[in-house]
Amino acid sequence: MRASLRFTGFWIAFTLFDVLVRLPYSTSFWYLNEDAALIDGAMRSLEQHGILHWFFHSYGPKIIRPWQLLSFAIDGHLFYQQPYLSHLFSMGLLGIAQALLCIPLRKQIGSYWALFVVGLIGVGRAGAEPTLWLSDRHDLFLFLFSGAAFASTMKWSEVRSRRESSAHLLLTCVSMWGAFYANEKAVVLPPLLCLAVLFHHLKRKDSLTQTLCSPRYLTFVVVSLVSLTLYFLLRKSVLGVFIGGYNGS
Image 1 (cartoon, rainbow, N blue to C red):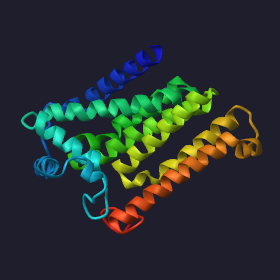
Image 2: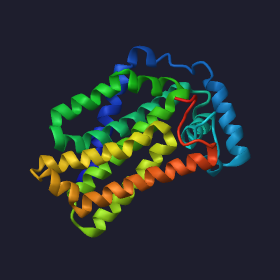
Image 3: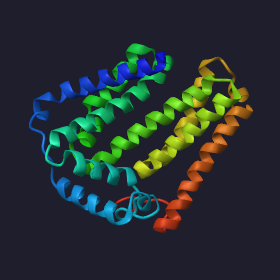
Image 4: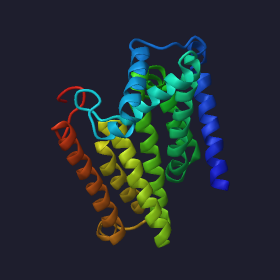
């Protein structure tokens, strides 16, 4: 209960902060460039194929991004004539992502530094483009699922109950796949999470050799690498390539 209240408090605080930072231009927010066309296309596509279709088919040159399509359809059905509500929806998602990242980060670097670092994401370009431009919302979902993966990974590092450990490891895998489906850049997430677990153990004064050879850490590394390998195989079967996005890079 306390954890839920803490998360809700951080979510509301970050969302209000992000809204206030963007207040000078948020009140005149409108869809940009091809945003309206993307919404119409997503609505027709989902009506024709359904959402599950886009988990296993290409959306764009070399990308699989179902969350982005789903969010476009939500915009079309709920906010199409009220783009400012769409903007607030994006800000709410950004606030959730920041809260997910901030709560475990507080234990690593302290509350003030965690608030400062995560708050910078809200005021910087990384937090602005995904909330102002629908075609960039894939980065918002990447941030959201990466935050969830980091939070569940840090929780997994702390618990010792076998049941809780398995639950948090499963949640980490689900979050990683959510990030994969948000943006192909998420392929760097599994190794980053492995490093986060390693640094967490070293901070607790565990030796490097002891950590690297521990069954728990090796299990996490194997699960992360298996998830990453399966994603590459999915890309190969659906898109014909292991890596790529809008272009070869």
